[in-house]
Length: 114
Length: 113
Image (cartoon, rainbow over all chains, first blue to last red):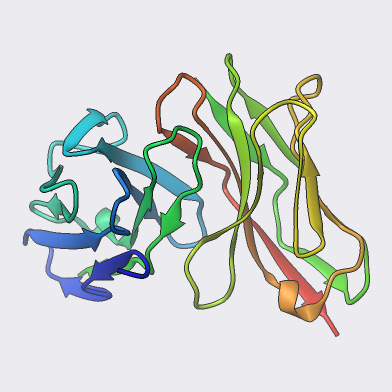
């Protein structure tokens, strides 16, 4: 596609429910990243994929968070048993395989946990 | 570990004023440095980047020079416009040969007409 797309754009859920966020990267981009941006704060790195593998999961805040990527394309970020502190904008970005390459960001999914 | 520190905002300037947003980093290797911008209601987009020491990145009148001796990558613009109002993020990546990117906390810029 022309750019990185994310769905849903907004999600409201109740505490304790599971949510799944989707990211479709730019076609051909082998690197994919997930970030969390809390209101008024910077980007918090969560995880990145190189192809379908995740060499660095160090940013996942707890074992309630998981992510997967298939076909070196779409990725899903799953949050189980959501808590109010999970409320944030979740951003996805992709880049070409070359290290230090520019990341292209999606519009984000705004998650609100009530 | 690696880190990026930006000056706190918000920064409020009048149109045509000179802009500096300070950014310093901590890294043991040789990262690339980036400035990303987030305009109101839009997603993050790359503004400029520099991949090695003494490189200068520039775009849309903005400039930043990769200074290894001071571990800095300050963003400057000679004459800001109202349309430059946005949040600016400094970032580094590729330090250890990996893809992990570290972002600063962001600096919000308001430009008044």
